[in-house]
Amino acid sequence: MKNKKLIMYVSIILIVAILVGVGYFIYNNIKNKDNENISEYTPEQEITEEQLRQTVVTLYFLDPNNYELVPEARQIDSKELINNPYEVLINLLIEGPNNQKLLKLIPENTNLNSAQIKGDTLYIDFSKEFINEQNLGKQQEELILKSIVNTVTELTEINKVVFLIDGEENKGFPDKEVSFDKIFVRE
Image (cartoon, rainbow, N blue to C red; front, top):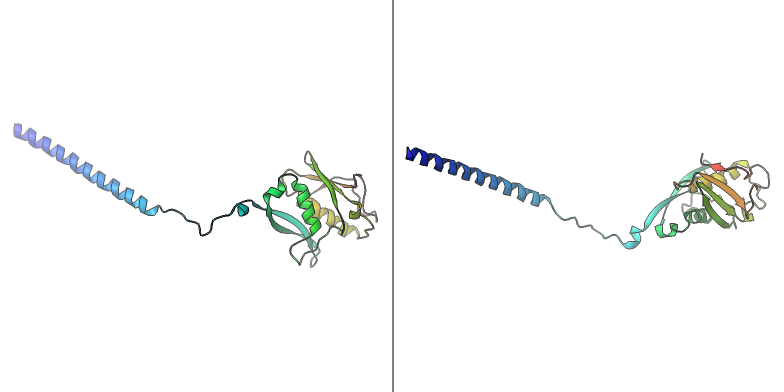
């Protein structure tokens, strides 16, 4: 009887030892496979500080082929947008498109006096050259305003735009086709 008990204890110990050994073998195999699949990613080229600061803005210019506004994506340093992003965007519109197939709409010699946000409305004050002796016709005048409105409303905080000329409201183009006596929204 003692032999039977001894054989039973030895058998149990052997079974437990075999199970522990098999478990250890399986655990090591899984661990080694995981280590084989994990490899450190090394980028081909490091991103420079300057590239890290780049952001894309959308400006709207005229496509002369179909006489419609089209977006032009422009990559700029995001630090430029920190203080007054509205002035930056409008000045980029004044400078004109990078794409030579597109046309700038804001009249020559126009200066931006200021661009200030109040609530969700942007008040844009242009110099008198914006309207000075312009007889462009209603369609082109509307495209000029739409170009500006579409560009600045790309910023989420802007929903409406008010145009001023040298600080005065309710001005308009000299041909009286389009006036600035209303609040403009993106169409």
